[in-house]
Image (tube, rainbow, N blue to C red; front, side, top):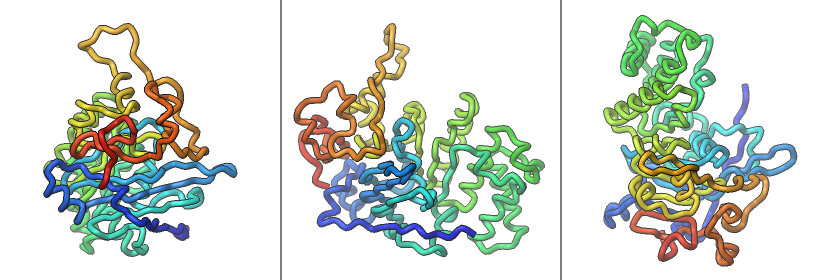
Length: 359
């Protein structure tokens, strides 16, 4: 059996508070949240090695999430969204990881300090993940009922009969009738398989769900059904959620807070209203400018020129500099400090706010 040999490093800083940011508008709530965050990532960096080169996938990412709220991680392909998600559960491919350092704190405990037994209790029990491709997330040689019951039985130490009853209940919750519980994944359509994955993720009533582009592999009509299902179940259970997507429409429909990711860094964060109504970073504004608007009569959309930077090259300054239409000499000396745009709204741009973030 494959053994876990990866070394998870804890990065020490003279002043960790310099790198933290929150999504609060009320000052007292802000202070309480910083003292006792429900979920927090501090200064996470992940580097892979590939063909003799180092891939800088995630670079000093920090974020927080309140209990029962939904945070959207938005960015184009290769921005580092899935790497962040897999880091939370420590399921990165060990053979490829060169460095994984920082802290991932869940209810005050650093996940990177947990042993194997603690991780097993955490995965599926307190934190679950809905993977992008349901076909690869399900075991092809076990019935869907068996797969849901197995995890429930482990976390609740119950009888097989009780676990099977709960599995059937979870399938009915996501709209799958009991007469299909003993069928195998290949007997379900893509949308139905994703429903099974959602039932699997919610079976043990986790406090946090990570949804990694849960509708990408589905057609448009099924996407809407699955999103409605996720929202309804989230509201019923009060579960917090991190939603990874590149679809701003999905973010507008589901999320409370938004972090925009570019080249492995969070370049803007705030409430959904902050990001959609008052985008500050040139990259965020570029994303919205590239969207079609039925209210405007334009001949062509406005794409963001150029390509993302090579992830095998370490970037000291602004990663968006070469593509930015507003770049200037000051940007060449930018050291990736957060700027305050408004209360709870932050931008990784020297033009994005009035003052540097002190939190």
